[in-house]
Image (cartoon, rainbow, N blue to C red; front, side, top):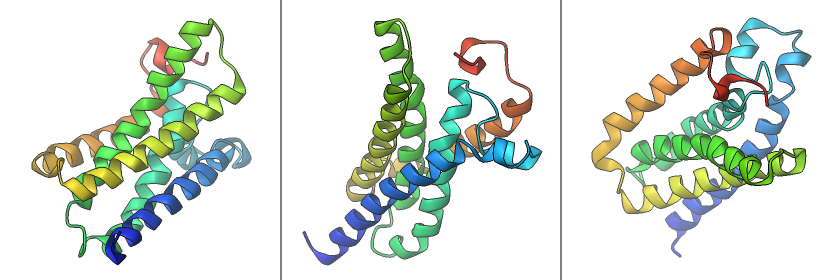
Length: 170
């Protein structure tokens, strides 16, 4: 593994660690802020699965946007890899949660935490692989637009959630 590969790999591992820690802390930010409206836009305001997707989405977005200037010169595909990893990781949360809780018939805090950690690692590994192989490059515009739309929907659905199961506390 050359120096540039090591740099991207270290960035990925650091991202997994930081997003895991800050995403976990973000779980409590809304309550700790006295239910501040702006804090609620980026942190869960209830126990719904949709709101818990924010735990990965916003910390990973912030981390990768901060890392982007350092990585972009050596890895031009990070621009398309960024939304690939974030979207895959965020949407893996409800997939894993509903799969395990549907099979078991209940949900468990330890398994919920594991879902978050696995989704975070998977999101970063997808980011890493896409940055290396550029497979997302041709879809860069679409992926980045989708990332912005999902981000906007997080803001909208925080205070105006649709009446479907994804937005209801389990």
